[in-house]
Length: 434
Ligand SMILES: *Cc1c(COP(=O)(O)O)cnc(C)c1O
Image (cartoon, rainbow, N blue to C red; front, side, top):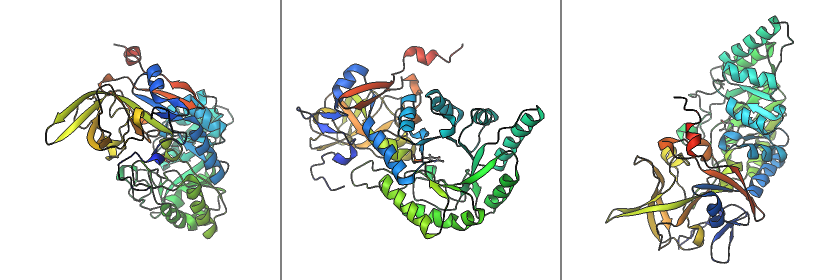
């Protein structure tokens, strides 16, 4: 992305369908954000539906059959159906994600179940419905799968034998935030390659009647900007992959996206090329797949808030408080992540002022954008928006302060549809049995 001397919002951070309306306002999927807000209120997540579909198709083109969308980035039934319609499998990391995907009508054999501590209940359901793959993370999980298998056999039933991959920790340190770095030796995930656990796990799983071992899996982390780390992971895994001779290898997810001015990230197609070439170079013949989450969903959405108070602290800064906060986007508080800001009514206006965009929660850490650029003339009542909020925002959110979690709208071709409604006070009491 190039420098913008007038601090105009870098256009590339907006959804693919972004266009400027007759009054300088932003349209996404042909819909005026102000109209969507009129209908659904704020805060509001607006996704460019065609972009979600295009990224799914790009992933299928780059990796072929078996490539899975990591649903933890953003999931609801409409998203599950969309991903399935576009030919991707779905990576689910809990019983809850599995439930939503199944209730959307996604066939169980399109699901890949992850998790470093899958419960009996999660494994029982996965076996019962027949998920496509279980990615086994620990020796305890192999024990658990064997217990379930034996219990079925001793009850006189024909035991289900799930297809499994083993999650391997290749010992590669992708440079990203330490909370989302997962390929290093010192990790809670997977079987360590260097310490020999990976080899022991392959031995055990191959001999076990409770599972059908079909492949290996490695996920080195998230928001990885340099595709070269995947090359390193492939190289680190290659001898072991060759030794095991299994038909499948998943390289996990994690390819990064640009969030702010000046950042650049590889496309899904470029990432696929790097992985493919690295695999060819080391003679890996297994079916190679991947599990992007962020790269599918992040850039497809913007979040729209309404400004409620503006407080100027002379000589220090201006705080602009909106009607959401770190419950609809915990990434700044959690990882110190940066975001851009713009006014939907004047999307191309030079952003000559810097303010701090905060939420309405009862703590000072409730910062959405620490150095938010805005045009002159921002007023109470204005809409203010953050781009690239389609992944790990709504899905990581909470109900802190018992605020209502925002609604989510998909927009395409001038039409919009509500896919998650805004929560109500009654929703807040739905699980309260006191
Ligand atoms: C989180 C995760 C992903 C997706 O990561 P992104 O950064 O969203 O692409 C894929 N696979 C596994 C195992 C994960 O934990």
